[in-house]
Image 1 (cartoon, rainbow, N blue to C red):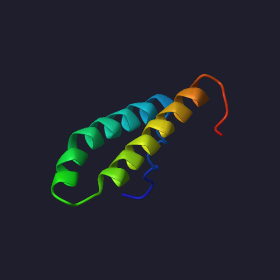
Image 2 (tube, rainbow, N blue to C red):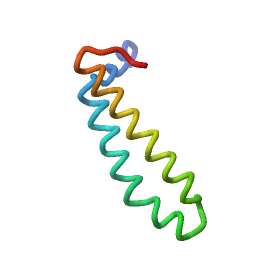
Image 3 (cartoon, rainbow, N blue to C red):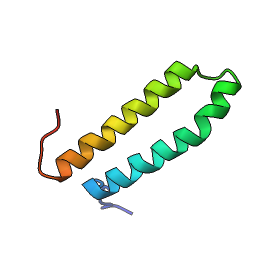
Length: 68
């Protein structure tokens, strides 16, 4: 089986798509988790805000900017 190549690093468009899906998943799942006491609303809100900022950063980089 020898010479397997490592997987290619995801490009910027794939990263943006992945983060967008993750934000959607968190928005769907976190309300149930907060209702069940698995996570606080403050923590859920903070985590979603962080992922939204990751998306903004990736979109900025795609436009030719630099990450903060």
